[in-house]
Length: 151
Image (cartoon, rainbow, N blue to C red; front, side, top):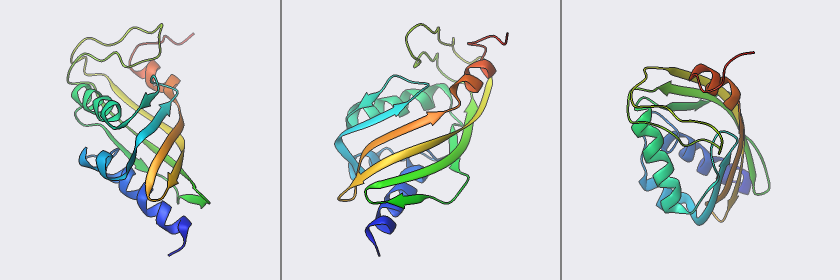
């Protein structure tokens, strides 16, 4: 397989095991670089395996049915893989405040649902994800969760 195909295989595994319906946090230790950067517009940036695992643990504690899936074929060039996705979940769990500064979080179990889309660029070097940088439709999610009011 080509380098691009190898990198896409790493990203497919990441999307399935980290972001998919049934999380497997062991995947972080297996295919994330020890100093990996995870950055999305909805959340504070996270760096390193333990911080990334804590992010997902807290996210899923608040949204137990959290699930994201690809909506188009991955595109790869060199070390970079680009994916398009959608997903969300229902806030039936713990209080949640993993938002950018200036936004209030949610108290426990509001029952509110979020469903949104995004694009992600991942950098894969020697079989490890070094960076995941995504642009999500966080505005839609925040409006669905009542954190931002429509004008």
